[in-house]
Image (cartoon, rainbow, N blue to C red; front, side, top):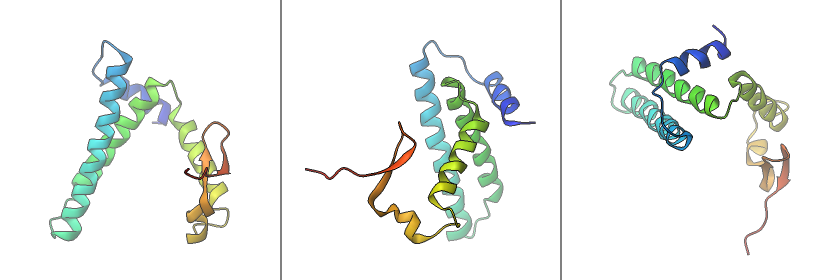
Length: 123
């Protein structure tokens, strides 16, 4: 299965809503909840010696389901979203991860231009 097929299968299993606003709110809150469940399972596994690795795996799947549904709302190809993310990271970390590059020297991404620009100073 490829990501486009996955997005279509996710859509078949999703509740239908009366409005796009209600739909995006549901998927946005859902992804936040599932990410929290991933974090909780990691904490239980490593801080409480309660092996929740299967829960981590299941909740990661649920998180990706919500990500696919968010892509569907905006008619985005999930494959393209992931490719754009890797391109951004490769630009930011051309020789691999470094602390210096991670700090970005006071820069941020201008989402409209897809390039790094200096942050504006607060007044």
